[in-house]
View 1 (tube, rainbow, N blue to C red):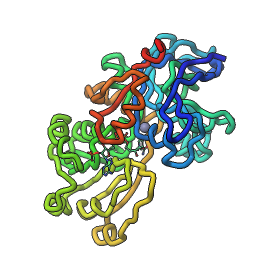
View 2: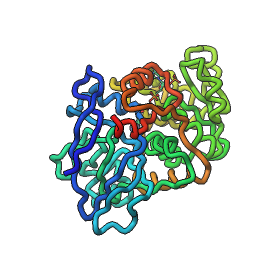
View 3: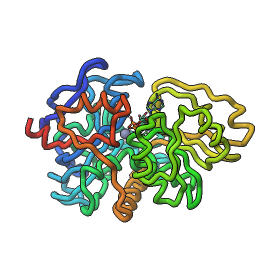
Length: 350
Ligand code: NAP
Ligand code: ZN
């Protein structure tokens, strides 16, 4: 069993620290990957700090993984040693329920295996994520990565990219639609790029005035400061869609009135505490409040190919593994431009 270097959280209130991890020997349908880069998602922080209350310690976070194939099982035909590949938010699912059959493995009716802090399909073995030098993953969940884009900027597409791409496609964002994006962080900045590329008129709704310049440079058409009451009043009834990427508890009722009649507010941010919804904000204009979880394998590949074609990548700050705890604190403080990505060579060398 290969032992690999990783970084783990061992308690909610302790910094992440070096951790030795056993990966399985590749079986006939497995692919062993040397991880080159892993993005830092706010879900990693919610989990490491047990903010969702279901963390199994020690936890090795990381689900925005890009690397090179190092070994393959003897039944693998779609990938070869040396290929550039990616792994996203889940590494297995039952593969036979209605949702898996429809390519919606993220909604597996028998429970999929998330990349970390979850159970493999044997329902016993705990999964460990991408803050590690290697990972072994069953072939169906390994994505092809085009070689024309810088890999450190591609890694965040595996979560932040697909999480914003999937709902925009599902709810049919199209040319001329007015899209409001709440929160300019990892998910928010990918939503700007993807939404604009689909022809929408994009407005960033942010509590951080300092992000206005960046929002416009990333491709947003407008920037609105959510702390300004007059601005929020002016925006009432103007959006076809609002995509809410906020990680902390906040009031959905501040944003719902900004939707047009029949408008849709899509939640992708997962704050640790629930929020009340005033029925009138939905009823009076037949608005919808909906949610979406990452995307299935087929759609993730479609998104990666779309980004390769349209030259869409993440804006990243590359860090060494020993800067991970500082990166967590900066992400929570909203000081991320716009995704931290770990260069895994730093872990190998440590
Ligand atoms: P992030 O980079 O930290 O961005 C979150 C943004 O939310 C911040 O940059 C900030 O933007 C805004 N924000 C933070 N605290 C706020 C507050 N108290 N009030 C208002 N706005 C606040 O996080 P991320 O990696 O994009 O993840 C965002 C959320 O999505 C997390 O909860 C994560 O767990 C979740 N997530 C969900 C899925 C899914 O499948 N649904 C997948 C991945 C992640 P401004 O400074 O611009 O206001
Ligand atoms: Zn994520």
